[in-house]
Length: 425
Image 1 (cartoon, rainbow, N blue to C red):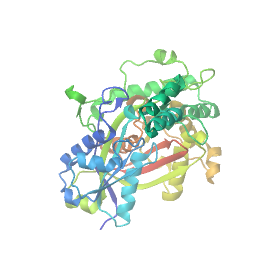
Image 2 (cartoon, rainbow, N blue to C red):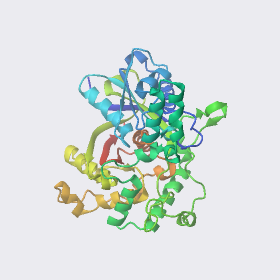
Image 3 (cartoon, helix red, strand yellow):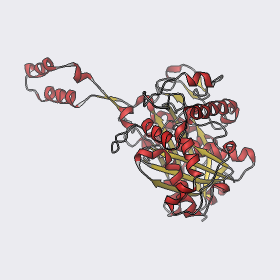
Image 4 (tube, rainbow, N blue to C red):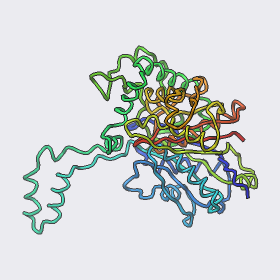
């Protein structure tokens, strides 16, 4: 059996701004839409699927082990095992690399891999004081005992813990993700004007790529029969620098440069692929979208988590002998324009490369080869799905352009980075 890892198919839902069109769907619903369409296109006997692996960050409270819920909602049989993986922003990639490792270990031959997130449905949580009040009421033995605690209710009891805010804050360094981007903007001298210009290009490319991106998007029904959603709703026609320049810094209001315009939005969406050994793909005449040839994860100071791609690419070079110059296209996730630009400068810096024991810079990347269809600033960043979206998008684009190698890389909240080396069939 060949252990060359084939990535087959590759679809995703439209990406929608959180609180918007897809807010009525949970992460498991979105994942099930993507899986149903993937399997309908492949026509692989479900008996040949060994497992479904799903990457998800927020972990819905009403869908424990969301992978299993997705599998069943997608119509897969009761006896199919399913597991959920979590590596923050790289959770969708983690699903793919987990599948690859299982195939190489001989534990499986074909796995459905999913990345899914409904950031709209990350809950508000009652605080500890309110929780204690509820507990006091629940323990009461009499009607008066159940009533009396409510006389102690104060406005502070009603201050919720905002789940998405907590999730986007590093509990060790105490910084939220936008604050880490501000650190990189200062350390790599990334100006506000550069960030806004980068964001503008993301929107322009995404708008121009709508027809191309449609090849990877499966239209899905809107909740409550309100029609269909067919396209991402983040890319803005007519976006200009003047509008971006009017926005105030969001994370450091006094002296910052990161705004809601040069950062990715909170987003809902899901993606799915089949990962299998090449022999099985050939046996069933499956449409191979590409191959995973190598991957690396790396860790670093959480305050500079945005540089995770630089660390992961350095590890990929040391592990697989692949240089940045070997890749025809690059998908570098745009959590923030400041972070993406800092990565490009880190790649090109001989001094930064020394910390990896290298005597050369990782390499400069021609901006024309990076995020050619726009990135997360325009398309959005549903954190559990983005890693897989990068893989799908770059493989489709390699095919369209007749190119060979692609690099998909992203930063990971908490201080990690991921890099996947991919090849066209």
